[in-house]
Image (cartoon, rainbow, N blue to C red):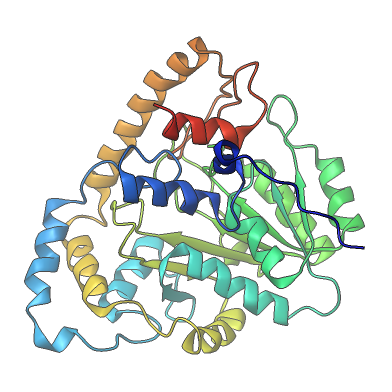
Length: 347
């Protein structure tokens, strides 16, 4: 028996949750009709002027408009390796890809093929939407775990979830997205010990690593464990989200196979954009001054907006970094999608 579809009033149709990414849904509304984009991590300020000049200078070079090396622009790769140090990032540990999203997807495809049987995936709430939607695309199980009331981790519950659900992959980001929580060194090392005990991999998403509000975050790399895969990009660091230049670092034994998968999926990153970024990073101490200025602006904005939101009835937990303010809706609002639509559409 087929159930009859419920009719929807015309005025209520705007409250039907769309298929696909809600970040893209609300971002596209702004791009189409104007407004302020609160959904997507798009900087409200320009990239470094020197970087834009570098792009302008390079674009007229006729030899730069063909395929870049599949593993990445040699100059850019060399600067990344120099930045992290040879013990972390040697020639066989790095792959430049089309943004952190491609890095995560590439790793997902690869790790899934390396495991037989159930491939369950886990992350901490609130979850960045790529982490739970990739498993949905592949028909894999996704498990999430809330932090404690004080935002600490219940490690007994974590281990039970990992064991009970046969978790094969754990996503972590620090500072987090959308909640800017920073994992401590002790927490990260405890999770790595669990990964070695139960054999699951860790994708460590460090896109916001430069934008911390207090103590510098602890970041794990593959020398600490073969199970750790490090992901980063220049999208937020240099305010170039549209350029799509990311990279991943992992052990040699994984990288050889990852590069092979990348050859048939992403192939390479835009040659002109890689060269422009490489030239800028070479002259700017890896963009340190610019990223420090962005961090200062984010701290100032967070310190201004948090108390204002709280005065309006929002519950805002303390954040330690990132681009976003994670807030619970005021009393009386129980539908987040309806609230977001009304915030944008109702004049």
